[in-house]
Image (cartoon, rainbow, N blue to C red; front, side):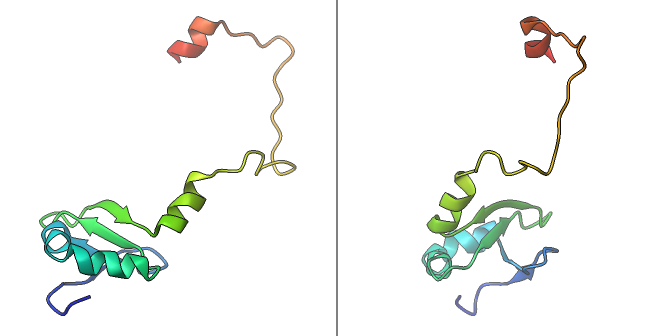
Length: 94
């Protein structure tokens, strides 16, 4: 990143860089270069410092997007009572 950009740290374990929205917009090319290098960058509102988005490398996003089914197989159990019943309408309105 260029020296002009302020860097804040979130409370996450990985200490992700967080940039105010205006700085991220003004230095978007530099932000993309950092993301291309494998870094994740959070964008926050300047006044509240609330994180509103995270820019991640495309490969990271693909891994997040692809969720494996059955990841809890053998780790969790669900049993329904024999007298359990629910109508379609009850399910849709719950």
